[in-house]
Image 1: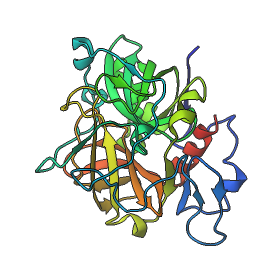
Image 2: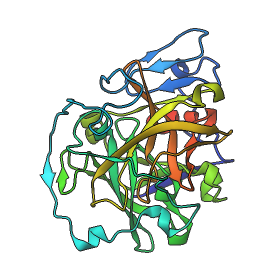
Image 3: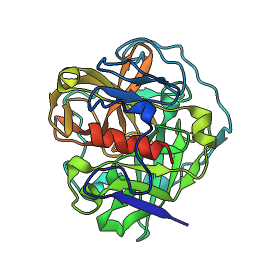
Image 4: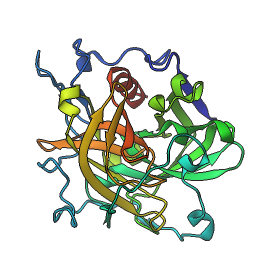
Length: 322
């Protein structure tokens, strides 16, 4: 049975889900981060960290061939090959069905293909195959934040022009063309906020897929996430990876760059993106830990992400705990 919930008023913690765990609160409204492991508190300091689901690489930008060489190779299990049909290739990016400016390549295309996508953090990124209630199909990008919780754009899980909530979304981590190195799971339980589902406000365009069990997330691991101050975000070098519709179907592409503008609810950057990358993680890499700071959604050069501010952070904590 499908289950869908929008948080009232834009973003308070969902009714019935309680408050975020005390170990992650401490009265800090900014500069908090959480991930897949054990919480580490830093007293009255600005940042509160919880370690990633898996150990990371120490650098500000991911080490990627084309940016920088990498030798990281992840573990593979439940590997399968699925034929890429013309029907799959014809699936439109979810964001082309409506909404704000589509994603944009800004000048020279600096995206680099990730293949295989079984290493950390690429296996935390997921191709999403969406079926809406009116029968329309689309594709997008998501990323694990916990054993059964996948973050994405709000318009992936809820499309007003296609009957509202998605009927189902197949989540395929580390997809690389026909290769599905970890298999997949289908989610029918979704979360978003009323700022998106009721108002269609692009500043609230984020949501989550709740998978039926922990198997897939525990196999691949997940990103952390952080609520950072304006000063920490301005000019911060960030990473992003997603499944763009202008590249071969099911292939993951990486790019990195600086945040050029910070507003109360959005981040702006000249990072190259394209339709299909909506819902991608925008993350920093610091001291071996990867923390999402935004949920990518729109283009226009600069391209844009929903910023992880206090209420977004709190909702992510609540959704991760489901």
